[in-house]
Length: 390
Image (cartoon, rainbow, N blue to C red):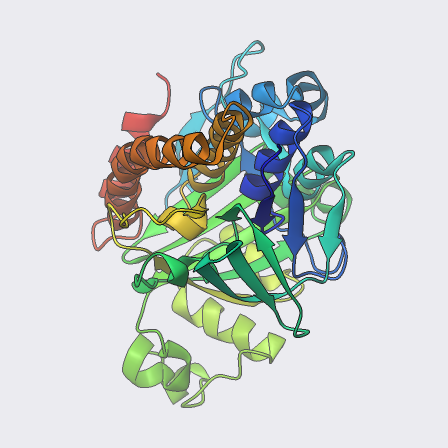
């Protein structure tokens, strides 16, 4: 008898879980709250690590297709001083496939493939211990029962409360995201400044990072340490006063006001670097939240978590990779479990393995964020010297 399996969340972790189960001819129900695949922008680009995300795609039988879509040249990394001086310029070797980039939208479409996703299914609560299994409640009042529910629904998971009381907390670092389109044609100087991959500039408690996506699209991230409510009083929280043209508060929906505030915050940096903000089209406020390092829970039969739902950590290129590998490994364990008792033991063993690996990476990324957005900008440079190939 096949287990009734549901995965909640159609991101990289949830779709990898479903795709590997599909490869093993095991039915799986994919529940996603978005009404359609293109209901909102898919996000930026991901570097998939050879021993994490790429390993997961291999388990799903999708590695060759990934390699055809990915951008190995996107591994290039350039670091500038605030005056525009190039401090580091790492270029990948022609045969380097350790961490090639792929747009999130392309990865989503690759993973979707033949999967039958139930779009517009917003989960409100998951209740383990029901007579017939785990009960899933939906916003439309309906409910369904499964033998195993996998929460792959991200930072603010609706599945997590069924097994853990942990909630994400603010790191003290905020990102404001903007983007440039058709950069090679419309902004050729910026295209040359960024190069084929990423470019970063680090100052005192702040940074500007630009990252190429495919099709001439560039994501730009202004990063800075600030209280969560920094925008409510720019003078008190950010040291930006009215003489700099700042009002007391900032409407985050006012594009030009946000642009002016960011330009004031990065005042004195090289003009070409600030052009990344001057030419940005819209601005999205993204305060960084994390779960406690080493987050675990007492095992609950019928419910588990993968990806950000299990171990939300600073976005330093690891979270999606871990989530994908976890999804693939859990799917293989589920497919190999012949009975309900075997299924529960397989999930329990998977959790133990996941916790150990995720805890290690949570420590690394937490320390990395401290160094990248730091009172001492040389810490960021030293961090990259340690992680980039010589």
